[in-house]
Picture (tube, rainbow, N blue to C red):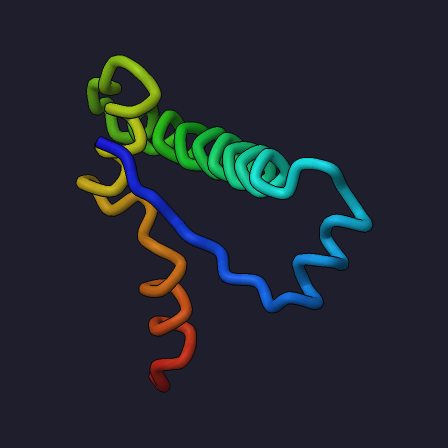
Amino acid sequence: MSTTINVILTDSQKKAMDYYMEDIQGFVDNATHEAARRATDEIVAKLVDHCNANEIQLATGRDAQVEQAFTLEVVTTAKVRNEQEQTPE
């Protein structure tokens, strides 16, 4: 499965990006993939710690490990974390 994300730039933003770089789409793709790689690394590290501490079998493969981390609620989405921080105790 994959997801398509579109970025909308004003004419002046597009011109500014053209000044800054040759391949805007390549830049956006690279930045997004790198952010996802870093997030995956962090998620997998948290999952490994959790599974080791609780003697839980670790899923095989990074995609499966990310899914397992969410299923076990080792991690949540940024939206959920932000909502939890804003909820008064």
